[in-house]
Length: 429
Image (spheres, helix red, strand yellow):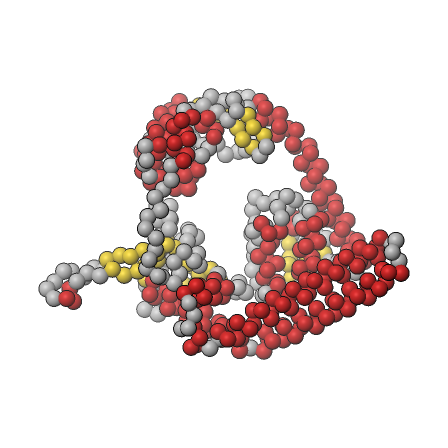
């Protein structure tokens, strides 16, 4: 097997999280459905799923796209045959049972801890530490700074000013950390953990009126972006240093004021890192240069995609699989009519019905993609698109473009296409 891409997924429950919200598993399946990969490979089965409903959805979608699921600890996970389906169900039920029994054992401990005023989460905001009994104790050296920053925010200070205030008092917080600080109800002496609530858990630091004023304060949004930049607010460009999204701006050129119209200073558009205070090497790039390069790359990829016979072959294969799945479903239905009380046969019919539906959806998906791409592959059609149409195509073809902190314009863009194959293309000056 050739490794195409590695999807990392941290701090997500394989038991409670639906597939739609799985940040690593969902894009991996979508990559297989786009024919960008053939196999979904995981280290452990119980890290893949601990929910039989999600398990059925994962296997059905991957196998309907012609792919396979493998776990290094149990091997192939499939519903193709009765034996494979039984093995997969046993592994799935055992993984879900372990998740359920663990949840039942720890739920009471969490409930008792919150009732005693002990936080069941590890991270604490500045101003509090854990005492010997686990309850929160106020740090006297930080109390004044916390009260002061809440009062400052309640009076209308910006988040940047509040962050600078905390830093001056020896408390380092990121911009996002400063923002979440004003909605943390621990400062009111309360503990909230899901449905578990203790309104008198420990000594409060902030007055409730000041807390609510600071919490409800909102940053001014400023004027809407009227520059008409193609990539503005699209979320495609990210900083190659910190991963933050790039934002658009207008800056003055460095031309000195001289006599004559050619000496007039002008403003030109750029894209720059959205978190310059936290980025180790914040990037800035000319909007004209990067948009020209991205447009060139998108049109090139569209022409390659629609000009190759592989896409047409994928559609033919998908149509054949849809017909075969529909025929299998009909045969299973006829067999079930003769054995209405056989639960195994009825379950097989349900599986065949799901496979036929997924195969049909896959065929419709491919056919729906190739028709507009075939039209838009010609270079003259790009100029006829609206700005929203161009943005939609860029998002589909190049969902992520990293801008690297290089000293020159060459080698600054790194592409992550829908097939997630990595390559570098020089940026022309």
